[in-house]
Length: 108
Image (cartoon, rainbow, N blue to C red; front, side, top):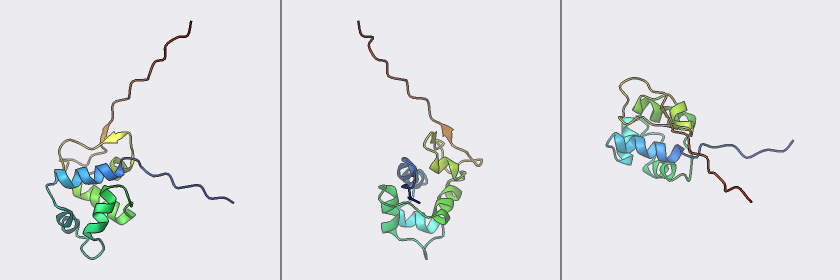
């Protein structure tokens, strides 16, 4: 039985950074805000934000809770974060507008 590579969200790293910046926190401040001082380092947060590493489920849930989002809003690439964070009500995110399809010239 072969193993396939794990599918990963392409926009997770940008969403994690966006949450921290919209909350007005430093990387260390974000760790404290999520109460993960014993489990997470600033270097790990940096790695998450540049897409080098992905957070574990506990950390992902802490990010979602900090922004008052469902975890799906972080991992579904077709969803943007709300403009205002933390969200006033628990948010599923905002659907991204569909990209226009490229048209090709007809051959004659």
